[in-house]
Length: 418
Image 1 (cartoon, rainbow, N blue to C red):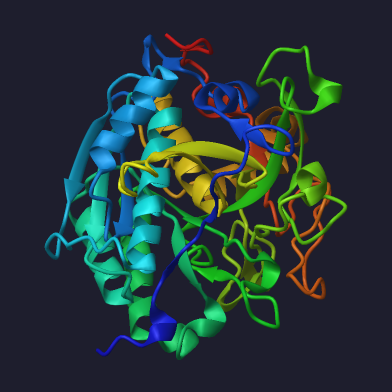
Image 2 (cartoon, rainbow, N blue to C red):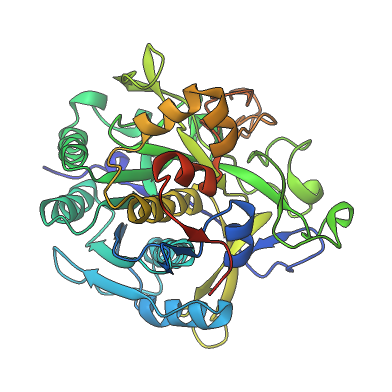
């Protein structure tokens, strides 16, 4: 089948380079994210994620993914990673003059370093598609599921449903949907990004991103995370990393764009009703909606990722955000939970919605994001965050110790970096 441009998958991230680490920006290190979201460093006496494998599907890959991860680990005091790289359709050559390939290399670095920072004991299986053509990405996904590489898969890419020719009749979409059905049947958790261009994802009407909109995928939206000890004068002098506040990532809204939006808008979380899939059992109808959950994603409250393929003068740490941070973060957390349970949670969304239906576990397991919206750049289309579930941030962001208490009550864990 000929690949049409509208059926290519785009990586979902916002990137900001060469901006100062203070004076209008936050920066979230692995230690800060562990503290803010109460993500354990150890579970049952072992590094979080031990015995689990997180699969990352990306296109093109990065020529320096292993050495970049080693630099990241050394800088932040993390243990060495267990990284495997597979090329189901052959290893693509890297063209440093291709903006598309450089962008996917950046995506690969973000995904790999994020997973390792939050599940430092987990094995990472990076499966690299030969291109961002939908068929190539489906081949990579099928390879991961058919070979059961791991119980958790993260995919930080997608296409607006309006860009998919034939919508639900599209053969590539049907192929991907069948892969996700197989993954769910085999108790494999799959996460995908909700998008970085607000509710419309670049169109004139609300548009969910696929594969996040697939009912067998858990969709991750984005927030602005503020922690005590961040570069907010009102919060200084307190324990660095302790959760302070959080709201919907939406730089297009000047009232919520962090730090006065002094470098301009970088994006806004996706989150919209699907035009293809009806609501699954775990959601109220009539149509499937994204997001399901959320995580820090703003470039203004960015994570720091090392890039080593830009040439000696430019290789360095850079600030990254976007829901490309949210999807691998939830994947890493799920690996931690699988370790604590001693078994895979599988398709995670139904279990998360069930926890959220109980006011007690909702309060203990999630930060409910009630501020902001995900309007598009024109400010004309978007959805408002509110109490309980909402489209921009889903059920909210994780309180991982609470999720562990609910899903793995006999597990023990440690919150200090070993």
